[in-house]
Length: 272
Ligand SMILES: NC(=O)c1ccc[n+]([C@@H]2O[C@H](COP(=O)([O-])OP(=O)(O)OC[C@H]3O[C@@H](n4cnc5c(N)ncnc54)[C@H](O)[C@@H]3O)[C@@H](O)[C@H]2O)c1
Image (cartoon, rainbow, N blue to C red; front, side, top):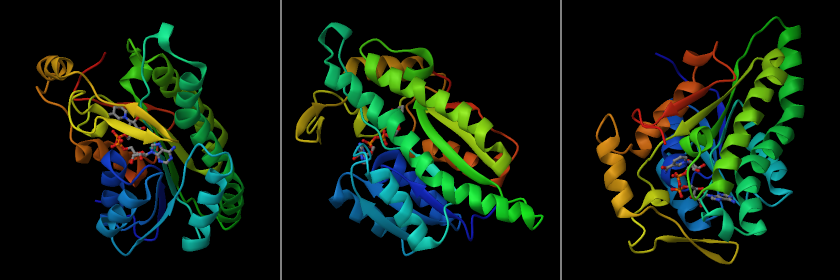
């Protein structure tokens, strides 16, 4: 139905989980993919799975100079950047009375500041190439997909920082859809419900924590809440990373060429 042959995609946080599934699906549709993750070991494993059409650059998306380096590396390796998926993310939750400034800021840094820096870094190349294509009478559509959450659209107790970052990236999305429409860029958001990755592993489970900048951050959801969420879900289950990736790939494909500035919820019908 479509091919992404000849397209270059950048997917942040693609070492594991939904990002890895997105990278694999984009590559199997024909795209060359630049992978990134803060964890170099899982990134290497992901690159092996995505295959020879991929390159990777490990690094922390919240380091102020890293997004620029990642965009430059993508263009240097593939001579273009046609699809950007701002996917890297994690949770660092607590009720507001226990949430520190560092914790709240960390959630804004990864979920909205990093995507902002990636898009700013890509803006020069995108504008130049779009102007050149327009002068040649060509219309080439490019794609940005930012990842949000039903915590961002609905709010979720215990996630003041995370839901603020995920709501903010919707504002960035809608604004960039307006700024970049003239350059033929579709800018959309996909908001996930509960998708089975390490982010929502049972809290009591082994390794229910992530190491982030020297901090040991517990991640996961109480088993009881997972059971309730499953039971309340219209489809009666949580989503898989592959199903989550499918919604993102729609926005990366020509099927969405006349859709921009939208938020699509991929949650099996659940809302918080
Ligand atoms: N799993 C869910 O239920 C769910 C729900 C709503 C939204 N999301 C969002 O989906 C996206 C993917 O999450 P996931 O569930 O696949 O989680 P995951 O933990 O399986 O994968 C996220 C990846 O991002 C990477 N990452 C985190 N911070 C980074 C940084 N500073 N620099 C570079 N890489 C970094 C992690 O190392 C990890 O490999 C995130 O934005 C998350 O907030 C997930």
